[in-house]
Image (cartoon, rainbow, N blue to C red; front, side, top):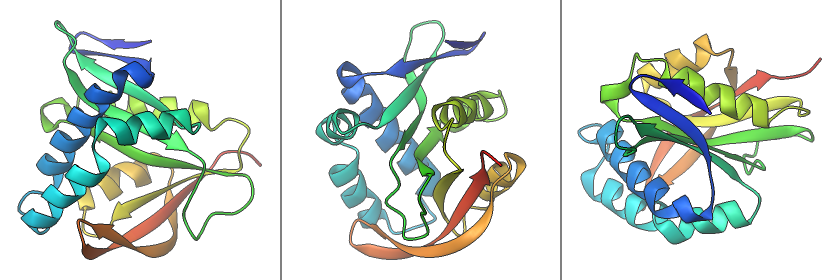
Amino acid sequence: MERDPAWTIREAGGDDAAALALVGAATFLESFAGVIDGDAIVGHCAAKHRAESYRALLADGARAWLAEAQPGGAPVGYALVGAPDLDAARDGDFELKRIYALSRFHGTGLGAALMACAVAAAAGHRRLLLGVYARNHRAIAFYRKQGFADIGTRRFDVGGKIYDDLVLARPLAD
């Protein structure tokens, strides 16, 4: 378990699906309100950030890490990894499907700690891939600092509206 005076990180299981869904919807809203269409955000969160969605992902082999505020243990961030479903994926790739933290915890090392969990989970794979909204400059800068580089693009459906994403990869093995 990763620790900081303000937060801890632990691996999440199926019993954590409601907490993952709550922090998933909250961080998605916080990240994209005023950036992309509001109805699209609501639709996306209603479809993708439900406890059942997280339970199904974990049951299908995905792994997640939940960051919790201290004291109290309220969910404030998470990372989710699993088999890639990106067109740019090749044999030996693994995907960081989601990584978010509430903005109050930006700059505390939480993002890097969550990334370290994802990288450790990807051990034995060639590359770690992710998709990121092409205009999310703060996230892109973070990913570049973490060793990711552009390998392609994709169209991403957010609540019925289509947005452009970059697809990034970080080499893991020689």
